Image (cartoon, rainbow, N blue to C red; front, side, top):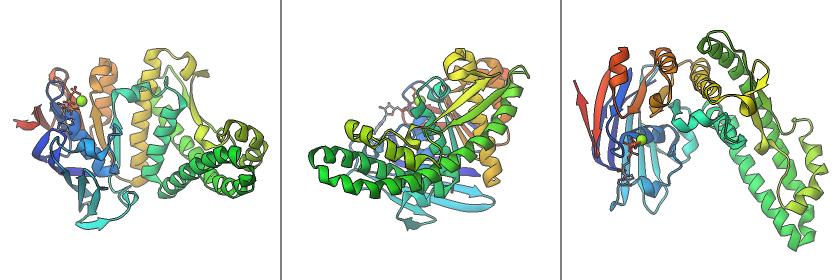
Length: 361
Ligand code: ATP
Ligand code: MG
């Protein structure tokens, strides 16, 4: 799939922008704080309706304005689509697909498949499990609507169950209502566990292959799903932990505590990997994500690379740029020297300065 054009009005530091993109590699370069990441953020919003940095809608609207618009024209398997996002300061956003308003953001999911790669992603192996769960959830939600709906239900039920655990400490007879929440939590939770299991298995095969190539065949990388609880035991464990949960007023068992582990030649990279090894695994993981999307939706995703190249040594840069030559990529960087020096193919170069974008010939 390809984004042909992005139009912005009053989005971040852009008053008006009309950007025509190439179907290959698009580079946005410029000094710090000029608006490079803002462009990727707008593209990401068109796919997910959310900011990749977790910003609120009102923060995305240009200072001193009340609304902002993002319009994206794309082509997917030769079919054109138009996505409009209308951000409002004091109301929820409006979304339209092909000029028809849609009510739920989830209806937009899966129209554009996007892979965002930022320097923080390079820390996914050494960070805590929450970052790795975010990775699985973000990916699976794009690929699997049933997963997404179960995840969103699970999170709501979990919040309500935790609230109830607190209320029971003041009002013990409420304890009888716990069972209703437990049942729902187990139903959604088990669906999540099963789908994560399958996802990690599929991803693992691709990941091992990619990593073998990056490491020149020296390292064998394996990935394992570390479920906090297996689906056939969730219900009984929840019941067994009830006294503990009531004491700490928190749900102590369930997929909200899952993790994935990475092993190189049998050694846990999260704990024992060198910084370089952890970063290489993170890079392999992103590349595996791209491949998995390709295999699942039978189309190439759009790749957004925010300031990532300067964080990689030239070997890994080469590997990355060579493996993404067939997909549309939006890259931000402060300088373009490395591209010119390494003769990487660039299809369009844009210079970004202070909310304006100029295409260089
Ligand atoms: P870096 O190289 O440091 O990552 P960048 O070019 O990616 O920089 P962005 O994050 O895209 O920078 O843009 C930051 C600029 O956008 C800052 O100057 C900031 O003040 C401005 N900005 C952010 N939000 C808004 C907003 N709501 N209204 C107006 N300007 C904004
Ligand atoms: Mg930036």
